[in-house]
Length: 555
Image (cartoon, rainbow, N blue to C red):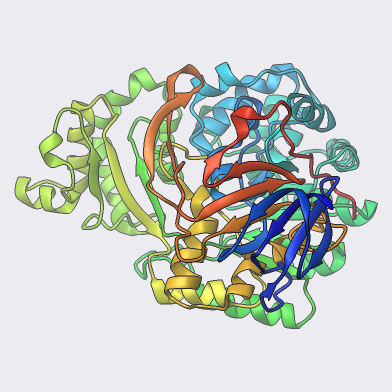
């Protein structure tokens, strides 16, 4: 008789093996038995349901949010039992007191984390990365939490404000290497960096990782190989070809983001087919490199108050350098508008596709909601960006525009999802919370791509959300097997779905975000053997102690 028995369900164990009719016994937070009949002091009826490992989200930015939202929502509502933060070089430790403001202003611009929310929500009772993990562990967390130590704070820790301005000396690189090693030995899952080249940080300057030399980046990314611990994540952008030979030299597993489908008009983005072909060929040649892909179209609801996705354009870099109070003057400047239009028309950076850009929220012009920017421009005899600017000025730059940036090519996305060496990532949960809610990626993938489109078998689909990601990260999770941690989801296959997405105001300092708190088909969720969801309802408020663990590099 076990503590808990999950009875009557069909187990899809996360390895890719065929589903099997088995009961699951849980004892001491781990899987104790898988057999046709298992009994427990507490029994969960899984008749007609699938019993699967808890989902793992490899690409989140929950680093600040975990300090005020220990439930890590909306991920924990969606069947996610483990998350990895610190992607793209943006952890919030190590950070000296003097650099906290600069880092928060950078996160505001890069990850659309509202500055006021960060200032109100982050309690800085840590400096080093191990101290940060200790702070998270002391407070408790509903699901398992791990993260990379990021290049941007590491660089700022050693160089101070110069991290945004210059290359590092050899001595400074040596200090950074030691900092990365100490962070990984102290619990970080590895090292991450942003080399995409277009992110703008504090003061409208390139983020610190972009200011680094290639030699510095490789020196820091070599640390996991040198100490035999941890993995590497790189936001590589278009310059990704070097990664494969580097991984062979480094000797540790590496994942990078991301391969997406882009409109053919984007001259700055290589076709996904070229990237995928190169990736598959390099893996066949022995590179242990994994490319992140996503099942979700990259759709954002952006405001001109903080148009983070446009900051890669030179004209918008001017905007990023201005305080919010001065930004309306720029939108009223006809010469600046003309520069913006010229840069959009060049398609060198972004082609928003004005025909598909719509107004999703406008306090001053509710009659325009749902209208495309291009149609309004045609009616008024002005440019699309004139429409964006005029309506935004009327709304105090708080108009929301819905823009499809990438990944709306269904055939292409299907090819990427099914390809060898492509892992599900890029949910960005915890970032861009006012623009997107892609934390629903696991349920969207299962419902839309596996069940409805039949892209792959159930067992392979579950493997891609669980065992495959655990393998990439060297985690002892993602599989239902005797002795493994009991992170378990019981789901109704015919009903699984992300549920409605809605906007709420529940962040520190009155910040808003998009959430999906009513998923379909997620009946039961257990984290380390503790139920956090039962019969479709959250149990978090009833728990005296949250069951999540800190995921630390162990191999």
